[in-house]
Length: 513
Ligand SMILES: [Zn+2]
Image (cartoon, rainbow, N blue to C red; front, side, top):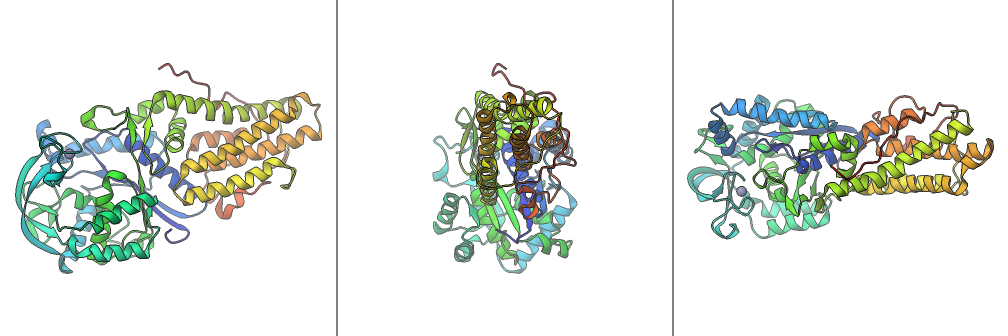
């Protein structure tokens, strides 16, 4: 689980040839929610995302546009920066593999592996997919000599390259995973990674002479580093590898990499072996998610089934989209995105449950309590909401720690639904003003306060709005607001705060586009 109280989380860096789409937003929003949770509980947190900008595909795309590769990737990378800002992604750093800091880090890392004796020169040839930037063994190609991912023709390339001696790391990797049984979430993906290693590892070609759009190999400047190899090193560049030893020692190896299941080989096999070869520890953990499919297929540029997440957020709201991306599909599983599913969940969970709870409570506080709320009753048997809140908070802490943010939301909604059910059972709107009404509303306000904290990693704006409507000062997502669980203990809602109803927090949506 990494060093307690310190949490370094990364997304994959996105290849700039693709525009940001719902699949990349799925990774990034889930990572953002995890980072925000860790800040909320007081962990010293560093959250990194960025863009991957080298390789043959970029060089060719720039050529087709008649511009320089650097101008091309500058333009393409900006789309990610803008999209993530629009989706309220709270990254602490945004790394680009064309930055000078990365060149320096990659060269030092490569030199360390070379000096440690894990590189040799050899002839490489094989079927190469330009879109994947990867060679495929004959047997892995789709019928008709096509890339198995892109279903487009592959090219036969021959080059003299530098090879990383991955084959020497079968045993060290198996031993490392043996000592770190929790390094890969979920368990099924750990078995997949171990299967790849046990199946036998071959040395990998990690430099290219056919292009010059890449980072020069420090000991042989006719070669540039293979794009995938350079990309992985971003995770340590960003925390000062080779530049700031104190900063590097602070964050490494307390890193968790969030990644899609299609890049397990690179992250869970190559990368830890590269780290061992360079003389540093492998990262603490890998969180492997499935694919968010559209119509049963993975989104990709070549399939034209990409959905622009910023446009979708414009339709439904940033928080509502973030909620759906975290709640709908468990990290690790595949899920199918549909617009109808998005609207149905929005209406049931956000409009009818959470939005309705706030509106009801605010209405009755206005009509029966002169607009200011009461404190909740002390926790204990007989105060049903307090009992459910304790269970829910505990379930949420456990779920976030297991990289299961969807389960944290599911648990949170148990509290929301119980609060609504209590109001329906007691019907305070039918009672005369007095202690009975104050008690039930104080409990409901306290439930809303706890819910605001619990949903703030996923819906930061709505949580802030909920917080201020129930009269609380500051924000629910202040770093450390739930440190040591203190902010999440029952009883924190103070009496006498102005409660305002306002416009519906989540107006009902029609599924008509
Ligand atoms: Zn391909």
